[in-house]
Length: 498
Length: 127
Image 1 (cartoon, rainbow over the protein chains, first blue to last red):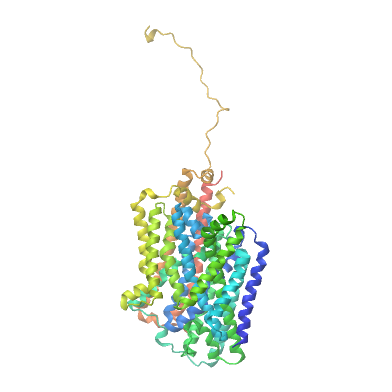
Image 2: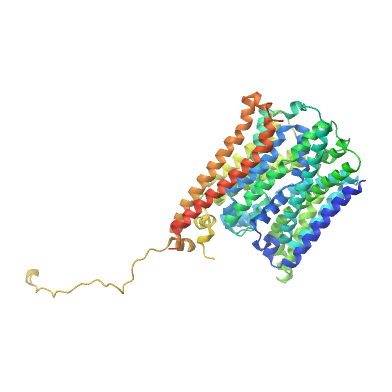
């Protein structure tokens, strides 16, 4: 039991709820709940996007996985950052100009089909749950590591705090919370890194021999894993439900682009630090404490390198930062999943029951509760796969479903409703196969196992090709307003009437 | 009565009206855009092609540079272990240098695509 860590975690939770409820008085209209009334400046929005994006996988997962598998894991943070570059050049401004709140809104607007809207909503909820899972599991692991309490308390704590901040304040207060949480996370990962580096440099003599661990692998399997992971991370970013909803808070397409450049700088600044923990862990932590997972390696490092009060303090700072990561990513995901559940399921239902009497925030709060409770319960049932591995699976699913829909939807006039539906179906099917194999621990040896574990290299091209080929085969199914929609997506706002 | 014998019709002076008739004026393309006409859509297609070319060339560069790194490590084994100052080359490239490079290319892209849009606004602008 370590009171300092507990105090740091409590502080982050209290700050999140307080700042979150401050936004309560400001948010009245429905658009305030979803997209902060679209009045967020690029600078604050960039902090908020980076704050939301840096999840349990970035804060603890990468350092742990790199500690376990070596330098090849450096590609993960690179891929997560390049994903934003791909998003910037392919879809950022057009998506903002589409004026849609969610991926489902975009799908319906572009393809003029309720069926595709429904499909996109299901996928959003699925990817959202898959991505929420490691946040709850990470919270459990971190709290157990820091305090010795059972893991379910961590998941419960994150659920309660996220629900309080999201259901009460909506998007505007969450924007503030997440902008703040980026800086908490950066501080919490940077300061212990510098302190630990200083401690290490005092005690080290001469160059360190890191061995094969620090040499990139060049066998075919290693290369395939690297390229497939990179494809998933680069194209998956644009298809994550909580990433896109943030772009709608920009005033226009130009600001959406400028925000993205800010996000890239903030992400790069953060991702310099996880490898520091992995290297120091490799030197100072030959064995993890029995019964712990590699995901908590960074939290064990301070005690391995120093003792007494400084170790306690550094662990506390890291635990607080990790909780900021769980809370910010979980609240962003809950907001977007709740938005979809609300718009497509609950609001029509509530409206029918109450004769359109109820205020729209009632159904939104119900949706937020669903979006928290389901994955929190799932996280207790499903065997953890490792934070970075689960998050990468979510990226692979997004890359083989939403990425082709968005890229072809934004740039290709001949995309048809049937083609989009077929591509989404193929992408979802390959995702279900790999997810099933991962969670049921079906791991064949050799190349079949590799193809199942890293599906993006085949599932992404397959989905793209299906969408293109089926669209060419069904030229009559081009949505009637395609040209008008596309010119709206690409026309600079200054040419349009206000 | 043959046509030749018809009495010549009275001569009429034909004049062009100089003021009252509506002059044919060019409709600003911006109106075509905001009214969402077919002509406006054709203009935007030109902009789309230019933007797509810019996006794809940047992505191609990124694929060649980043995708080339594992190939480099595989082809030239000494690049895997050579050190730059205190750090091995793979750690320097993938852990440090890559991030400023990404930010610089993003800034370049934003400027270039804003220039394309500004040129488009100049050409079709409300005139």
